[in-house]
Image (cartoon, helix red, strand yellow):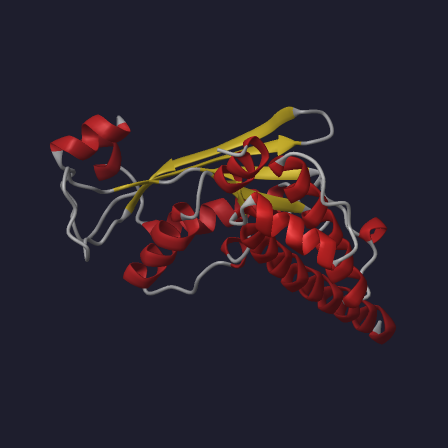
Length: 228
């Protein structure tokens, strides 16, 4: 039992190390994307890489070189990295809002929807959906109702956030996500986790959930792939 716990601890440590290195690689990629052609050519020459080609070609070549170099310096093999999770949980909160929100407006989650996707079968496995009763601003603004399509009656009949969060965590457990089945949370941008979930946990005075600490920013992946 002790050996198994030590092995699990070792794997978790290696996973954390890999996550840190890949975050650093993303920062490097952002820097490469900011370079003009002359700077790209200069950096490629510096590393004895071919400096000829289009700007996109040069960026790709420099990114590949710097990524391999970074992984090698961290003793991480590319073959050790699984880029595809067997499951994705796609999440998209709706929150209270006005047509014009002051900087300190307390956005409260009013809908907690998620879709479980099997990446190998490219199929939806299950859905989770629950409305949430707001506490600080219990009356939805006309703008909020129009934007989200959520009615006052739906949130009035709903449970408050802590209870809905427990329901969602039971749903994750039902599908053995995070235990038997490896998965990643997916959101459209940083706001669902970084603003809405984080802010809601503060408002509800509850700990930030483990599943919200790491996620796939689909907007960033899309813009990076399509260069937009």
